[in-house]
Length: 610
Image (cartoon, rainbow, N blue to C red; front, top):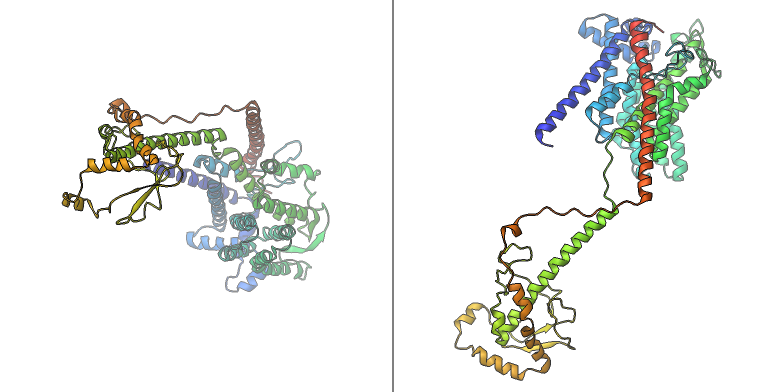
């Protein structure tokens, strides 16, 4: 991909990403303009006493959205209702961008348009709407995307980011077999996010703390106690927000007023199974299934793929904790039917939906890596070895020619010297290039005593050892070393040229040496005559033609035809994947259509408030 295409893709990704975020911002702003909860929270924001923060906190323990409203109102000089709607829209847009970047990062090969579409689906889905079962799209079932509650909207991007950081650290530690530790920077940042989440709405903390506690218990059991230090690290990460949540509980439930209620009109907490959860539905189990049908199916896909990671485990633990709180706990007083212990369940459902959408992208939309088959790999290896052997044989032939030339010169054999197969011959290289090459006798073909790096002695004997397996040189086998005594070796070629008078006649010396040779050495000297025919063949290699020098495309390695069992297995895998994608897409479409109906028809068109 060239730079122009990369720039084009980058522009397209940026456009789709920010257009999707803008759409979610507009939806959040429009719903914030008229829903009943915004009116109540806007009035609370107007009563905050910023000059006395402690008293302000005692009166309202989740003031983050209200403080942001006051800030936007001061800057934009708009009404409290408009400022609150804008704050919620921005929070939803930030959550959209966080989800976009994470899905794009983990789902390799997926296009920017697909990521934007998935994030839009994530922020618009609702419980599957069945008119004859649930007359209201929201009441009784809930939704992962709550549009009418500003404090829950405010906590969404904070809780999503805190969850992602925590899940990433959990996965890193688990993958290292509990050898790595919680990153101090990540722990500090996550602790800060948990404090902000509590100040926005404690619903995330009330499911996160029990969820990670259960996960740490599982770690201790799996590691046989080795993960105790990690449990302490995550405990200290949660400690600041735990202390803050303790104060919030005291000021909300235990600090009674003259009317017997705490801040916000809550009288206290009671354990009353199904009292608040069954206020708007007669079949709680069906209502739960309508909300998490898609995450349930994706959990099955995760189990089949054997990729149940820390993020899935933590998300499901948080959902179970939130569901238990929703089913078992209730408030006394005027807020009995408000179902405020269900906010943690809805927040956990949002986190679980994000994890499920990410799993959907990874399992069905991301590019699958292409792997080479064993047959192709074997064929490739065979081709490489064949080429290597061919080159070795050619090198052996040239080495034989070089050795024969040297021995022929030493023995006075003229025909071998005229073959043109010497070190400077241009008879054509093994690749047909025709260029002059200086063949090198490899150490495995012709090995003198010692190493080639050793310096030659100025005088003495040079021992040559030939073996039976020497390729290209089919010398007769002989026991022991065969040494040829030589005169002292000259220092350089210049010395040889400068002393012609001291050099005896080569022919006479060679003749005398041959007569004095033992029988084995004579056999060695006689070898070049028997090698004239192959050397002549090497010398007779024709000059390379344009057709020979033309580069030819490399032949592809032969592919092994898959067996019948392999074809059946591949067909079944593709079939299961196609069926899984179809079922998941149909369920996701049902959630998405229900979410569109709830948002655009029920809330924005009919303006039915909750």
